[in-house]
Length: 326
Ligand code: AMP
Image (cartoon, rainbow, N blue to C red; front, side, top):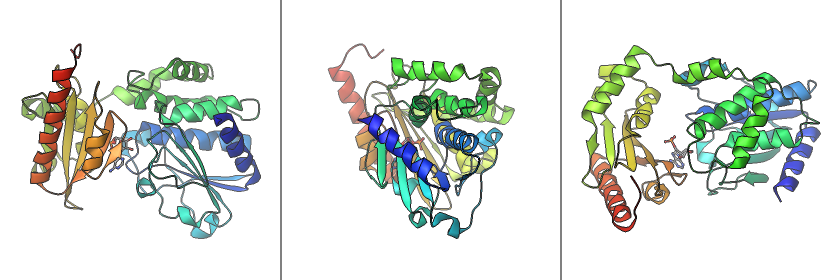
């Protein structure tokens, strides 16, 4: 079945002169890699087409991937709009998408908002880049895949799967990644970009280790208040990054970072887990995402503590009814 959708998407790409590609807000490696990778492939394959990568926000962490395009509204009129890695229209980093003639959605989140005219959604995929890899490699005889494009796509596969560790990684994931490597990816440079940390970031990490809390059943969490953001000179994005520092505590199968967003006067919640799902919990608190990596928003400290209590109860029940969770 997905062969038919992929063919349909390729036909649409071939039939349009103008193509605009976008991703989700607050981009991660998968959002950036999938969009930049596909755009590079399309530009190299169809030099006469107008292919744009247009988004309304930007990530410092992925600055090494370069800047994106700016277009005027009239460009959308006869354009094909391809949204990648974006589950809901609310999360699109492009408010102009309705101006486009047709929309293709390519995504690996649990389907909650089929906003495309064509929706290719496979939530079993470890990353959207895995889908882009599948798409490009399926049509490798017709598409021009450069080492640069392969690197972007590989980057998203590597980052969204936690270096091929997370749920959703299959033999197919590795076969696709392996095929991309054959295009000549400079993975030493790529991993240097992904792993190098500044002294300031390490100081923040030290603060997180000193100040994180653990509930009776093992939920690890930290609240990065406005004061802490000021103390460390953090952007919202840098503050949000602390969720990764909580991921390796034995017994803490759920970990949560709360980040105060002073502009919106709300608290961004980043939830992660292993072995048990937290997507329903995220949905309860105005969010969603994947089974083991989801986001939410809470609007007060009381609501934050309610979420923590719910997470604690969830983990308590899981531990009481399961064995072998380390
Ligand atoms: P994050 O913690 O922002 O990296 O989000 C983890 C996953 O959950 C990502 O795949 C997001 O796309 C998804 N997600 C984050 N926030 C929300 C939200 N408010 N609603 C729906 N999905 C979300």
